[in-house]
Length: 443
Image (cartoon, rainbow, N blue to C red; front, side):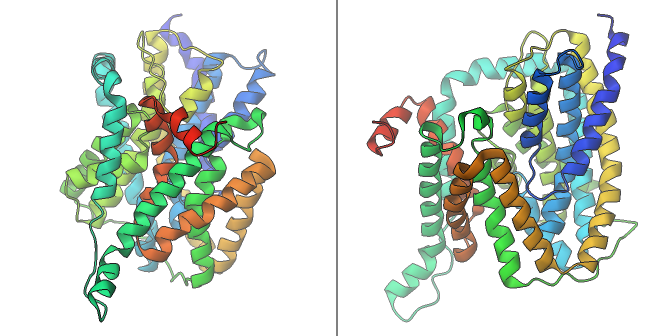
């Protein structure tokens, strides 16, 4: 096919961006959930939409989501694993009347992610095929090292309060101890979901949805409801305190984390951003927010872009995994069409980010934050029930107290990612079935 003939795919990418940009405003509604529904519909309408068109529609959706899911995370308080770090400084900005500025800073980081993908595109095949060849035999122990670093990097805090030595020891180790407990419990939950999930078989591609909602979104929303947070009047500024040096540092750090997460199995945008933050010693909130915007964009969009690499297709991430079951991309022309659409839809979604952030400011200033949180909780419950039934609701209810432990005891919420790190690392090492049998899951 001549490359100009790929132009008919452009409207599909733009339509996907518009759809996902709007749906991203719904708290905790992940693009993978919606994409799964679109793929099921496409299977029954193959005369109406071809494989390339469906792929381009999904590309636009993941671009729109990666840019705009920040809005619901900052203003409506329902983060997922890729936005949990953005929310922490983002809500601080929100309570300082600067929520709009925080949202735009993440968008600037995402635009930096677009630029990084444009620069890497001509060399992508050589770089990523070589990396895959080198790293593939070592995935299990690399994941184990990443997990150990995550746990060990949370050093004991405090130790100054208490009348006795034992009380001071508890004060120092309670956060770390609860963090380890959170990781272990979420890891056991992940093993159960991998080997004996109550989610109906026909919705198995949504297996982790209720767990992630329970671990990340519901505890945060409940905290907002119980604390009765009052959002002050927001200031929509026309300029931002982010000089070029700050922007460049943020994008560089985000690129390290996002590209690592996009390529490496199991590693999510949250983990990639966390590792990059440690590697570059971030201390500035502006650098941090920009870096997280770049990291999550590269994580979602970069991973899906790897699926279209000519002669070296790499299936990483939920979107590529679902699409790979029904479609195989072909040709260099399609790959460079994907690259071009990343640029076009990235700029389009940034413009939408500015508009939707203003809409979110209008909403939180006029509606009590507790009411917004209650509505969000209802949306989360309905989403889980609709996608996974009562089995999924049960998983969400089990995951919620696990996700609440870090909030109550001040440990890292990243420890909840044991739900995927533990079972997949064990499987890569060939120990998954043995551990599952030891826990009584396999009989």
